[in-house]
Length: 559
Image (cartoon, rainbow, N blue to C red; front, side, top):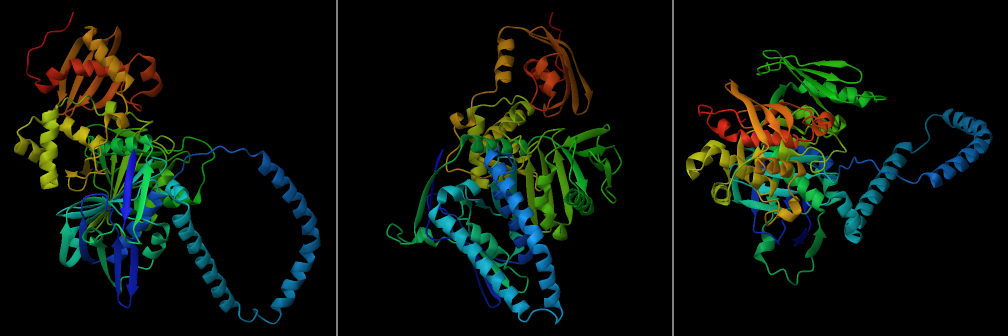
């Protein structure tokens, strides 16, 4: 997809005396967005934006290289090292001991400061040169500038890692800003350069800090401005699909676990000190109703106690395993400022979402099932969510209401639009896939946020999943037979039957999500529900939708 970026000037941080201004340059190719407010706690903002930077440049995909030339170079270096070692070892030791007889060399501290200053100057010059002269290399580090959204109650920044496995979002309540606030609601990209990260480290608590999404570019005639910078970049379809999949995944029903900050610290500290040499390399959640959750780090079997955590509210004991846990290191800078940690689990081997609360700020980290399993190619979240039935009118009604009100809960949308709850769930799921809506876990509401100026098209989102296509074929041919379906509990329903001659059964929750399942096909044998339900389970659910909508309705088993 071709994306136009136009900036009047670069984003900067200006510090003078006791004042600092964080000025973001908005994308002039998108509708006008502006904000101006003073940060009450700039230290929290600095650390959160630094963590967001780690997500922006994150790319943990393994790369295979031709190592023949390197092996030859390494052998040459080893021979040279062996020749030099015997010659220089004695001389270096004698010179070092002689220099220490009279104390440390004169001017050592000044020389250290001088060399350190020269290093940082050269590093920043190199980064600026890449940003200015090699935009392709820069775009390999940052596929798309972060997205900022100004809403009536919150200002939040979003980014997506290059490898498509991590999503970061920093939400700042409007209460975090002091004084009068000038704002124009909307969503836009903001210019982000690598040197900007270094400037963020200059924010201090003793300086009054102002956050500014600068609207000046919209007010001047920029066609002849020398500082105008225009880019046209082609975003990979996989990257865009991943972003859409992520938004839909965040709104799925999930298992919510509250953790103490100390538990997350213990996990990161253990991973920092130890390296796995065998599998399984997972973070295991042991959840027992009425008890505090327990964490285990495999393969060591290390137990992390969650002392003081709220008891888990569940119906039955559950074990959830997640992989790619080293990506959690981006949260390390937030731990001294965090007051709560919440995890939303979709299931073993499936995406998981971490929410770190810092008073009036919240950092959301969304991770795919494992590092090399990105949102698009890994878990088929469309299938995992169930088959949502909606129509164009419901999608239009939900989009129109959210674009005006900026945020709403599902109950508010049902009351205001007059649409059925199940149809609205499908509409919101579709809008999230198209990059128009994002789910806010802290406020449990849907927010209008257009990550692109236009909705992602069906071509970018890709064709319908083959398993779902096959399930619809079973229905058309009349090859789906229900043998049993009943309300197991208030929020769980059991469905048993066959599709295409294959026996299967599933346990669904109140939202129609697959909780547990069993099938005799090869797809389910290999993947269980980690890559979404198989065609037989999907066909069974589609056939049972009328019963799930009205459990009291009459039903007779199919022959």
